[in-house]
Every structure is written in structure tokens, then in C-alpha cells.
Image (cartoon, rainbow, N blue to C red; front, side, top):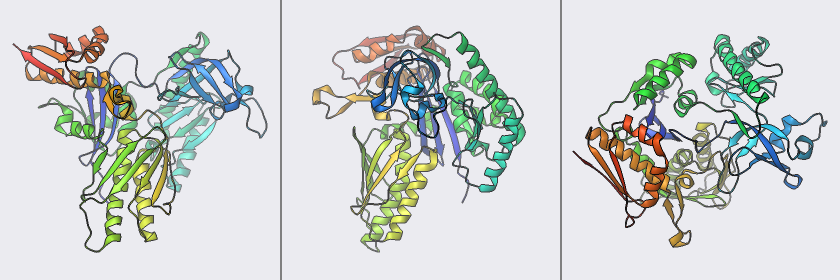
Length: 494
């Protein structure tokens, strides 16, 4: 099997940074983050929080972490705080009490009415490894399956721990990127992670809860750390400042990747050049076409995500069974990609086309497992039921993309969805940047719905400066009550 061509495309816009992973010309992963101000996602932050309430009935505590909704700390995630306790699982009341200051890490964003999920087993991630200062020993990524390599890495990791650069009783989790890494690489990174932890400990001494003690890398550096590997052919970035920052990070953490970073200067916008915008737009449609002519329909609900597989116009000449198998295989391969891109987690139920042959069913499940496992997100897949249904659970880290960018439409009692003002505003800002590239120095006039204009103006000076750096110096915003939220106009004049 040939090695896939993998490109990382980073659109560093005035208001939003978007990172696309493209494999053999197809979008495989998409991550977004605000370019300035408070990030909408806080996964990875290490926070000194204050326990607000302990609820023994659900074995959990609610912790003030400095945002509107208290974080949720379950007993399992708090176990590192337990002192003794023998073989039994400790009670949440034995680990934390109301009013306690507790060091926690945000491991899952706030979703809907639920607060952020917290863990007291804090960790500091690097490119090759993750420092676990409160959990000793060596652990390996489950995606490293070669037993010889696993044994070698455990030995190397043990030597790194014995070298004394990490806190006493600390441990390391060796990530998939550690495959093939030697002692020197792991030792150098361990030194850096150890220094970060010492800085956290220093900040902890004078902190008053709630207080953020450590944030993860900025979006561009995080994309390089987590998304760039030996298979990455090119890293294209459309902003010179971001290019310089990316190269600086690579020189410090992954020097072999620096020469793969390129500045994209056009023509046009980076995501348009690779048809990424069309792929992103398609993520908000329920139906997804398959190469054979069939399709899958993806319908998220509050309780679960339902997926239906339809053969459409495709009919195999060899019969009904072969038709179902061919469509199901394509659907299984595409489903992993769609769930990644849409950010769908929790319970997923797939209605595959009925198959009588057990070997065919096993082949579809194998394809589904491989497709779902590509990003390392924990999943469980149940066997096909007598009704042709497959139940999947996929760990939910963030709200689905649909919920991050859309909201229920009040005029139809929640039966439909409308894009959030912030999501429309991001499109407006990208259109302003495009207008500035096409007509340097021209005045730009934006007409949009009041909610969209209000969101843009609320960003204040940081957004104004970011647009000015991209050539959009003279921008006038006009709120028009007659426009629906998704409609706007961006024009230029000399």
C-alpha cells in the first residue's frame, strides 16, 4: 500500500484560525479556534478551582473554574486525590470537600447545559510524550501495536524516568509520534515538560482559586504538535506572522518539520485553492453522497446520532447481496471521516443495508473499525443486530460542529436550525479579507443583520487591528433589519 500524501493547511484569519488535514486531496480533519481573546475551547487548561458542591448520589463534585458554569469532577477522575483506601473505590466525599481548592485539568469542553468535564489527574502534553506528574510509570499509546517496538519504547522511557529530569513519582505516556524515537529525543522533551510542570508548581503557591495556571499551545503550534508527522508532505500557512511562529516552534520542538512549512501567497484564499470551503459547507447537510451513487443520511438528536445507509441508484449486476455489501463498505469508510469532521460523539446508531452473509458483515465492521480509529478517539462498536443496526459509542470531547455554529430556530419551534451570529460573522470577516486582497486600499462596506454586526463590533480593537494588518483598513459596518441572519453583502469602493 502506497504512503498517503498528507498536507496540513492553516488558515490564520483575522478572527479565526482553521486547520485542515488533507489526505490524497480529501479533507480528513478540521479544527478551529479564535484568533484572539478568550478561546471557545479550553481543553488542556490546568486550573486551580474551588469545590462548590459535593454530590454523593452521583459520585461527583462541581468545581468553580472561573467560567459561567461549574466544572464536573467525577469520582473516577478524582482518584489521584485519594489517600489510601485499600482495594475499594474511594467515595467522592473522601477525596474533596466543599470549599477545597483543587488542581484540575479541563478534559472536555462544556456542551449544552453541561459544564466542562474535569480531571485531577493533570497531564502536560508534548509531541512525543505526555508528562503525568501525579501518576508514575510508563504507558504507551494503544495505536502502537508492534510488540517489539512497544518493548523498546518501555525500556527507553524507563531510562528517561531514571535520568532525574522529571519530578519524583512522575510518569510518561508515550504518544503515537514516539514510534521509532530514541533516548535523546525523549529525554530532551522530558526536560521541557519537567520545566513546564515546575512553573505550574511555582504559580500554584501564590494562586487563589479560581485561577488558570497553564494553557495549552496556541492553535498553530498545537496543530503542528498534534497533526504534523513524518507522513506530512507540506504545511501551508496563509499568514506571514503565523509562518514565522510555526517555524520558531518547529526549530524548538520538531526541527525536521521546519523545511516543510510554506507561506501560501495565493492566488485567492488557501481553503478555496484546495476546495476546503465546499467540504466545510457540506458538513451542515444531512445527506452525504457515496462514490457508488448511494448515500448516507446523518441526523444528530439530543439522545443519539442516527445514520441511514441508502443504495440510491446503485445496483450491482451480481445481485442484491453484492449491492448491499458494496454500498455498506463505502458507507463504513465515509462514516469515520464524517464523524471526525462533524465532531459527533456519544451514541451513534447506523442502519446498514441488510446482509445475509456473515463474512460480508464482518468485512463491513472491520472497515468501520478502521475508519473510526484513524484519529485515536476511543470508540466501541457492537456487532450488527438482527435488524441490521450497528451501535457505536465515540468519546465526545467537544460539542458537535452543528451545535457550535448553529442554534434552534425560534420561529419553527426548534424544528430547524439557524446559524449563530458568530458563525455568520466569521464568513463576513473572511469575505472582508478577500475583498482587501482583491482591491488593496479600497474602502469596504459591510451590510448584515443587526445580530451579526453587533457580534463583530463587540470584538473591538483586536479585530480592527487584525483586519488592518491584512489590508482592510477602511471598513464600514451597516446593520440592516430587513436581512435574515445568513444574508450579508461586502462591497468595495475606491
